Length: 393
Ligand code: FEO
Image (cartoon, rainbow, N blue to C red):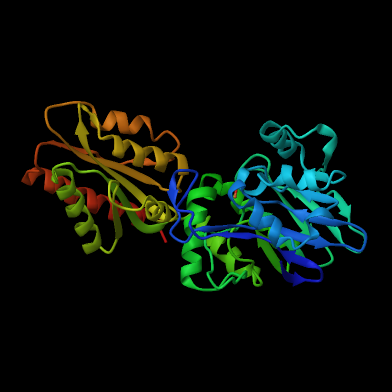
């Protein structure tokens, strides 16, 4: 355990080797499962627990305090913060799980914990540990319907569960967020993958955190913020309604025909002063694609056809983009087909969550001809003009 302030300790576990989260997004720097132990003058509380793979290490971190817990506060029911809960309850038969109604329901679904083990709290309700008070803020949808924040009132510490976190580990055992561009990039990647689909909620809760005005923010992944403004200012930028003068181009190309068009579009946009980032959906890290979706104004999907359907990896890129609900304003599709099929219709069907103006689509048979390249140049010019009109940052 590491002391943060006045009998409040970090007892999280680093998972350096974890390579992928939710079996979906690569983790280049691993992650941490943060947990916090609070010793009040009368009662002791644990904020969240740990992941199944790290239960033993987590219990070791508690340094013998693990069997003297009165309350386990569950800010969120997802397994990376709750899979050690049953074990902690076995060690502390009289302990109560303090959480909100929705989180209780999800914990019972997962672990069949008896009803009587729970103490359900409402928004702004408080729990006394003697000389310390915990106030609960019910904050659904960052990123599950059960999420909540716990505020340690006297010490001005806010535990925000997944919100404001980052998938990053420090080999030297550092527990505080380093105010560097590398850290910000990890936090932005985390925001893109986990929080971006809930952008309006994120905006609202940034306001709530500012109202609470904590001196320290303790999230469930990554470093602790001794300077809350560092992460709050970043979230303000990432959740801004006005995107940047940027285009993101996820694509798949089997015989380099679609790729030729993608390259031409990228080149033209850059010549016009528009930032263009292309991602080969077969070879590139989809986490990097997610990062670029955060503040890009336009997405252009590039696809080849396979068996008269868009390539399955193109579908994956489209499905992922749609699910992440980025704040893009314009969309186009470019792609090559061999003999026929419905390339754009199938892609369009899977973009229902994007609130975009559709720009012209460009499809062509075989390799791109002069007239196709001309259409791409016109698309680049149109994107440039649209970005100017839409007051893009
Ligand atoms: Fe880190 Fe939603 O769990």
